[in-house]
Length: 432
Image (cartoon, rainbow, N blue to C red; front, side):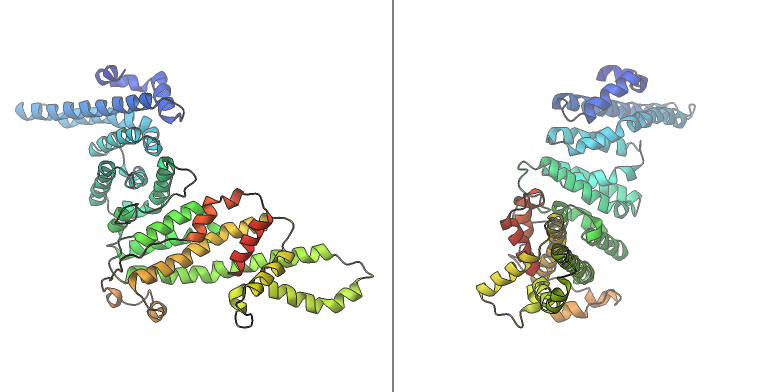
């Protein structure tokens, strides 16, 4: 079929051919060899078309200006463009295939398509960002090179699709993850521990406005209203922890906005958990009219103990001792107030991972760059860029390891049966 389509490209517009090619490319259960063959056919067609155009160009130069070759070229490239528009989405989706050979040929087809100017590049940008995280150096270098070329011709396209590209890169990493039980990480597991999306960041970093908008968009994903899945948050946090920052302003800007997010989302999260306990406690009691007088006299002491139990431990450390027995009493006090419905517990455990990751990320950046608390507090985004233009002195041997979130994902707590042990674990997390 491939050879027939090279000689007669119009056949690729036939409904039967479109259905055949698109079904092979989009069907997850279809043979890998068939997918590769379809991609090879498209690749060969584009290569032959490119060779044909180059030959026509040489012929035109020999025959002087008797023919309007530009018009001929437009007709030929117009057909190529129409053909690629038919199959573009399915070819791009092949980037998420588990087999590297499928991803390799899909990237070749897209590179040829872009080089010949057959499609508008903006629709390919997030997919190329995603392919820039491929474990094979040859593939990620090719994807990165395409992004560089697009950035030269169309300034701002990369920044515009950067967040979408990072989300897609997470999907690529999910697809190639050989051990599904292990969380997807956002850095390379080698000596460099570089961020998977470091090339993307290095392209955006030079423009202060674009860089800040990009970083804020990533941090907004940690907001409890964004409902971002925990493993993706871990992936984003890994990248933020390992990006190739050059000036002090970059990590200080991130830490400043982490503080803003924590002050709102963190307090909201603790308050919602506290309210779920108090409400259900009241529902459990439901005193009768005969008991109301007695319950009113005890309400003062009960509400005090409830409030005491529902305060996070860090707010009570001034009056509580640090002994194990006190910690156990704290946990038991909160356990008594837990609602029968376990949904708020799981919701709290899930949403709190974003807060924990931000806390860990801030501490990591502080350790990595050697910033003091006073320097972090004094930072203001509105100050002149020159004030924080000093180069970062990175410390060696500082690694980002958010243990609580990794344990949460490995134990699959979000889908676990709520046992007493799981409840105690969540309560301990709340108190901490």
